[in-house]
Length: 131
Image 1 (cartoon, helix red, strand yellow):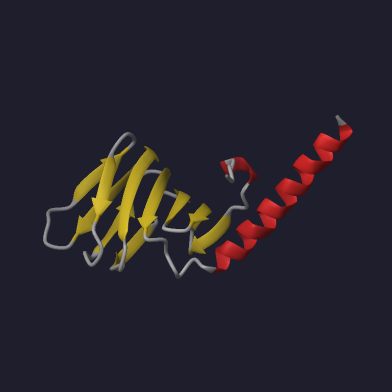
Image 2: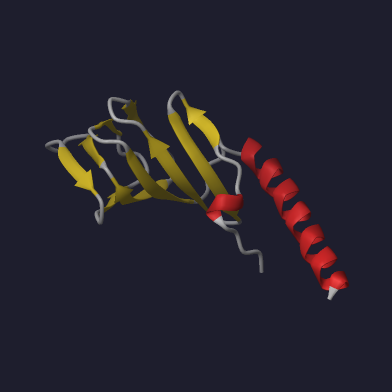
């Protein structure tokens, strides 16, 4: 079973001023995201569920048909597939998104993950040989 450490994964710019590290598995994707205060997340819709776990900071979410709500550290929010959502980053924030099934629009990241896992496995083999 693969195991990942966030600090070992390459952080990439997913959207302008939105940075993330991603782990992709067969039926889901997990992304650790950083976004600076003042950034906005344009209204958009997915064909997959999204669960957002706020680690730090605050985002004012706009969810289709609902009053805006503030999501802050310790909050978990579910956005079902097909529901429009977007928001404003009120404080520098970090959050963990889980997408199920996994996002196809981040598919380019899969190759980077495979390369990372191959390097990690090689390093572990080298360490075993030294013992």
